[in-house]
Structure formats: C-alpha cells, structure tokens
Image (cartoon, rainbow, N blue to C red):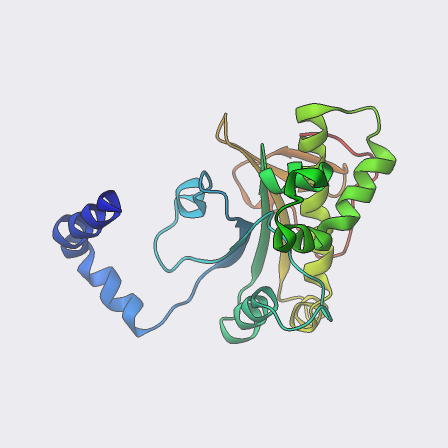
Length: 225
C-alpha cells in the first residue's frame, strides 16, 4: 500500500500540475473514442498499450474479458455497454484478450477453480469457447491450447456483445464497429482479427486495418496468431 500512497502524492505533486488543462476539461465531461473490453489481469494496461490519454478510452475489465449475453440478468457489463453506446455515443467496441490468460487456463482446466465457485460460475459465460476448443483443437496441448482459447474467446464474446439491444440497434444503423484483438504480453504485439482471412494478424497502422466485425463474420479456419 505504501507504494500506492507514494504514487498518489507523486501524481499530485509532479504530474497533475503539468496537465491541469486536460483534467479541467475532463471534469466537465467525457467523450471517449472507444469502449475497450479487456481482462482484469494486472499485466494489461489498455492506455499504455494504445498510448491513449485519460478520457480517450471507456474501459470495461473483468476476468477473461467476458460479456454475458443479453438476457443473463442485470450486470455491470450490460450497463457499461449500454451507457457507452447510448449515452456516450461510442463508435468502436474492442474486445481484447491476451496471452497467458489465467481465466482461459481455468476454463480449460475447471479443477483449478474447484474452490472458487464464483469464478467457476463466471466462466460459464465462456462455455462456448470451451466447447469450440474441445471440438476443434483436440490436437493442441499446453500453451498452444490456451492461446487458441484466448483467440476463440474474443470472437465468442464479440458475439455476446452483439446480442445487447443497444449494440444491435447501433450496428443496424451503421454507427458502431466491432473489433477483436489479442495482446501478446511477451512481445508487445497486438493481433487483430481479419474476417476476410479468418485469422488474427499483426495490427498494422492505418484505416485499412480497422478489422471491422460489424457484419458478424467469424473465422472459418481457426489459426493461432
């Protein structure tokens, strides 16, 4: 805790004053450019990865970057998505998984969370991912199997995002785009899903690499990025 407390004081003394104009503007309201749905894993920093400033990303984090589908009951994920799309007018939604995801490891080895009933229940929203891996990746083991689960889970959760009424309406009106990313911690690379090839490929610079999944296209040939 002492490190955190010292960090707060350092921010107030050395950072806030140099960015006062920014924080005064943010105090009036927010206009983020994207909803970034990612894992709670402490190794993931959305603003660092994307080099964005405070106020530029609306961030939703939980174990396994999971989005319960519409109809699953009232939950924070549904409220966050609805607020982002309706109140903030978000134009882009990114679901970003990451290498070595503990949630995906637990999904494939449920015995690891036997003493954590809440975690086990939460991973039920990724059961489609588990089934896809079991039926299509039987030859993979260890890290390769987890990597495949990470990628497939991004696509499964994007499909769940699509079920939310606010998202469905925005997609139908052409004012929202969906994107699937995977961040590789050990190399700093980000892979984006390309529906035309059915693969995750390194994210390139430029509008041609938006990897828009708004039409519902899903991979046809599973490939580990």
